[in-house]
Image (tube, rainbow, N blue to C red; front, top):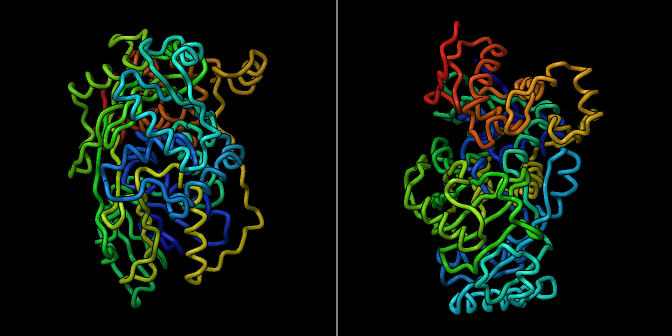
Length: 505
């Protein structure tokens, strides 16, 4: 299948999705090629998705944690490109979330010390906030003030820091999917199961032919937003200069929504970070707490996302050391997140045209890059314009997108009206999360092709039972709507097919 486009974006994660949305407002042809069957199957789905400015307590914690990667580097450089992107991305996020109907919460962060060693770390963190000029936004708390704020926190606390300024939290797929929906509504073409395996350069670098197992895509420009695979994609076009991608991973544990009641004021509790080590427990926007702790473990295999029992035990140990009142029985699932850095400067992003291929733009973003994404997209558009791309605003550009109705969150009157318009909204499929068939059908209309695609658009199967009850019905609906046998319905693409029950195809 042959396609012609002005710009080919390789990679449909948060960076590629944001760039696609940004470029969709202009009168140019844009195509996204994503190797997976959806937009959140790699780094994007397992990110923390904190959106924060450089001058925030969350960033101060992050700086201490990552100092092990480059011990000689200055912890905080306000004029660094990374911090400028963070500030711009944070400023753009709230208006963007309003236009794209993305749920988010202010991040209310409490850092607590439970022993003398941690108190030293807490004091160091407080000193960094003074250097950053945000000391007035951070409150020093004594043990009683901490317990008054969060009575279920570890009773052995000796001191703490609290801030609710300059940071937000979003459910990672919500942000990516909203960008994809809006970009598609404004004319961007999306090709899934479209791993780019070959790039041919033509006309002295003024044109590319990118090939996937099913497509041949001719483009004037390529934007490499392939995340973990950015180095591999650049190499296909001889477009990688002086950088490599290095990877680290960490495991997280998701808890039952009932544990959310243990939080009273804040939605994130951290221990003081040490270089290369972190611990925290945080409430997702949908109400499930999750624990993240441990080291950034270096890996070479880009697909090494398996979970380990020793990390699971470590997660629980540190989570219970911060907040009491839960046990292993409250765990729903665990997952591993992979983080990407570049070897040129681990604290910075690479957003530049290749020296070898002047129409090939590399966007190799550190970590998954949620904080930077909107600012990076804006910057990419500026770079494209500087390279001669005429960016004329579309007369019919629509900057707004409405999310799929969340039946569970509607008033009784709104539920009745929705069912009146479409009776499928009256059939509950997932009882843990109160997800209806109407929501699932709408998710399929918007591009869901897998069980995970349904999960992350509707939350069907993300509750306590983890698909044990609703799973067969979701498979049945997908098979029916996509006109496929149930044996072809997968969790997240080829190789993850799930035949969950006997059925006539």
